Image (cartoon, rainbow, N blue to C red; front, side):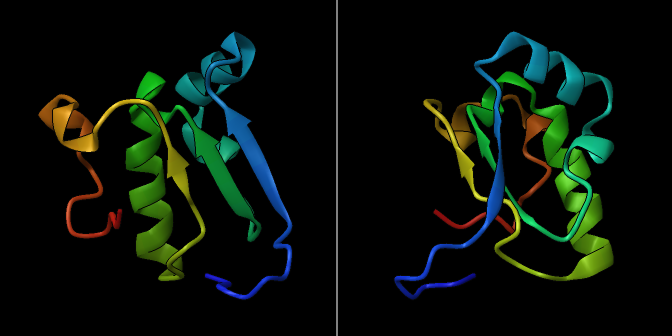
Length: 90
């Protein structure tokens, strides 16, 4: 993760957008594929993306690729949505 004042190029997946949410729900692995940082806004709308992130991190080992934002506390999500246990930093 880049902590300097430099801009980091990234893709943004806004899961408030219904088309984006549907695409992520159908094929989360493809939606997060690549080496670029992918910011996922309102991730709680498609918690299946957390499993795809876990798989990608298991393969790459590069932390900081998937900043997550949302208006729900991760701890409040159903247990099945907590795929990032031990990898999520607030």
